[in-house]
Amino acid sequence: MVLHVPPEAARRGVAPPVPRRDRRLARWGLAAAAVAWSAAASALQPEVVARGLEHPWAVAFVDSGHMLVTERPGRMRVIGPDGRLGEPLQGVPRVDAGGQGGMLDVIADSDFARNRMVYFCFSEPAAQGGGNSTALAAARLSDDRQRLEQVRVLFSQRPKVGSRHHFGCRIVEAPDGHLFLTLGDRFSRMQDAQTLDNHHGKVIRVRKDGSVPPDNPLVGRAGALPEIWSWGHRNPQGAAWGPDGRLWIHEHGPQGGDEINRPEPGKNYGWPVITYGENYGGGRIGAGITHHEGMEQPLHQWTPSIAPSGMAFVRSDRYGAAWQGSLMVGALRGRHLARLELADGRVVREERLLESLGERIRDVREGPDGWLYVLTDDRNGQLIRLLPNPARR
Image 1 (cartoon, one colour):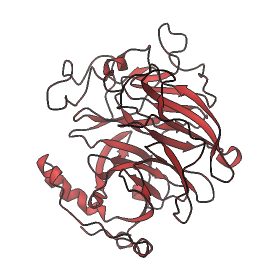
Image 2 (tube, rainbow, N blue to C red; image 1 turned 90 degrees about the vertical axis):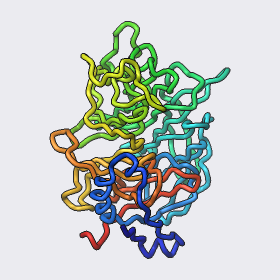
Image 3 (cartoon, rainbow, N blue to C red; image 1 turned 60 degrees about the vertical axis):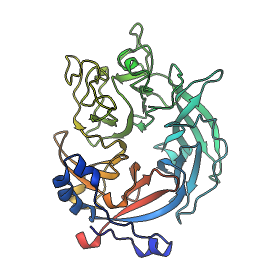
Image 4 (cartoon, one colour; image 1 turned 120 degrees about the vertical axis):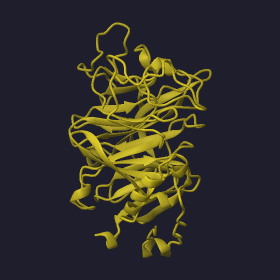
């Protein structure tokens, strides 16, 4: 499999990655599938836009070709149209970085050109004592793109716990302006995902000022937190608004059972009562069942796990009509980009792309220019633009 690096990337000193056989797939008994998928990898021509990012987590498109990138250790940077990395933004709130926690997702407001607002989520330390939780904040990006202004926390996950795992933390702005935020179960509190007096293992929905929409499904229900939209989730690290006008998410399974779901208001997605995964090291979780009355089935699941992170739909025609409507999902453990073809809201075909990069794909977004962009999760992480390979056009 040959991976093409464009001349511009070569001038920047980007060496072509060394092709390699994916031994993990052979161990999992998927060698034949790997052969079928590998042919699709050359359909893309990666172009490195920026490098030198420390464990980047998310990218948002702001103005005049500039991009805002978060780094898990607790920073945000602006990347210029020429790929130049700006200094860390001033005004970022205190972040409890460690383990899976830190500065995580970021999106630009749909009316950014007018208000310059961004929304971001991060692991927020407790004001007193220990513990942390996922928080959602809003801020204005200064005109000179050097700092965050008017920073305010819109929502804090309750309760805070002493954990370095399962923060969730993907943000989606719906067409009506409401914000969805995915929240992990915090690993040690997985049973909380089935109770409604906490925010662990939930998807929540709030207004842009942090208030609760009156039509949220649990408003007025005794013992339930009104921000909750859906529950029974494990650790959702991908979310996007679908062409069907609905919220789509994916979430990590424990060892197998990574899922794609379309969270509907007031519905239970089962974790940890039902799962297609198992305990780390083997052994069933709970009763070891995959179905239960009153609990929703995933639209798609991966066993073995690919460890999904990042999610985007292809809306532009940059890659041809066959790719329009495809769902793109980054894979951390799988070290590839998955392209999922959909029909009637179901996954009917999957291709694995970028395998020869050998990189953990943390985020995938479609830019305003119609190209796909991915972030690699590494100490020297990269922002990569994906161009179609002319040889495959």
